[in-house]
View 1 (tube, rainbow, N blue to C red):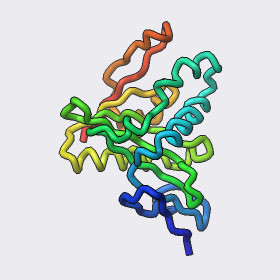
View 2: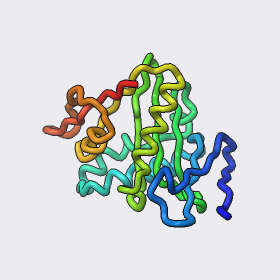
View 3: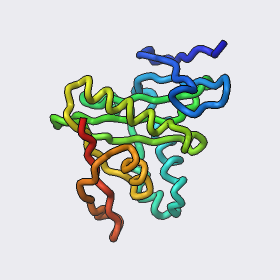
Length: 181
């Protein structure tokens, strides 16, 4: 018997099983929509996830603000996301789609806890984001990738469409992708 998944935020919740993600025997992950009260946990996870790529402290300090969401950010119209968490409510990963001032959504965030990397959490979250976008009538999703995560998006079938220079960090460019739905 698996422990139930519950939070103060009562939105759709379902259990993700070992057939969907590489989970140890008996382990489950719970899927639910992101809530405004998740802002701090998601911000902390994004920072930890980004740090895995070996960036130095100076770089991490420069990108800290980009990896922070407030409760009002997550309540904003056009923002929709989901998270996966274990039975202890530790977040394994999350995604955020952004339709603000756009016809087509942008994948604003897809981050996986370092302990869950390489186990299918990122792939599952991207497939869930694609499903949501399709259900909402989108024709494509656009996204900016960390250069170290570009291989993941290539593997998942995203189409490279250019790069965006990062003015705060000379010489750095972020790969841009499109996922046709």
